Length: 344
Image (cartoon, rainbow, N blue to C red; front, side, top):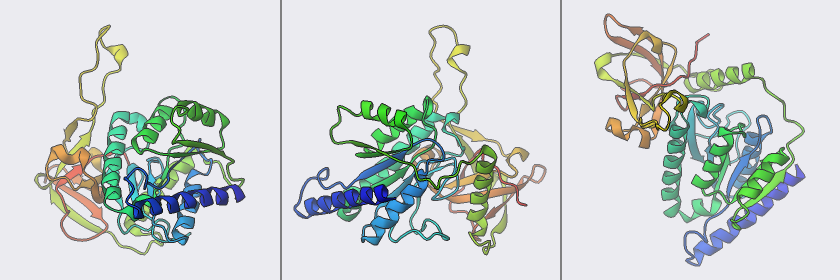
């Protein structure tokens, strides 16, 4: 814990330097505060350390941006999202992350292996949006960001970790509880003197979680979205005609290279949009409501919220869903997912 507090003190000093540089009219790069990415295997305490560093920074009067790339658990909104939100006050142990202004891009699956190209594309969209916000707000820029990542740190997971460091221009990498990963990232950034790779011990209070527990946590997060943390909210049931909404999925499954003729490359765009026919398969799934005006803007648009499909009547062409609030949906463009939730 002493090491974590010392880490916060160093980040705080960097924020103060960035603020002073901005006051002197320094270029954007010189007035950029710490962009901290926290990496490590599953159950190493990454999200807990994120919350500590964010809360301590908020106590000092900063408003750092929290970026959550862990689509498996989802600490800002429901799982399956790449999201960000400014943190203006210490995080409440019961209420969790405050959600006045969340920015969420919907991936729709609990693992990036389903469509890694879509995962990368959504990371880029979020990073570009945050860069635009930072360029016009010196305080947010100086406060910087704390980035939470997945616990998958091998093969494709490691590749996506490298991608996220590059995409979000991280300048501090905190590695929790794994010497091998620290060495890999240290070697990968040895020619980048502006990036610090720091190895930290994982907290002794970390408890391993099995896949069944993780699945249960995902279901709880979805239920929390509709019913509230204290189960004190009442979602609204609505019915729409099939013709009133359009459902799409981002990316399509490609045949592996081994199934193609020798030397041939897959030609399908892995991030292309595919229209989905409404069917009974959608019952119990979660759909995202996109802010996009046109279908081709879906991948570059964040989402307004989520609905849960409770019934599909094929004969009458009616879809029944629950939403957190009454009234019409803010958009008729919906994004399909593989996330399911069964109301108990």
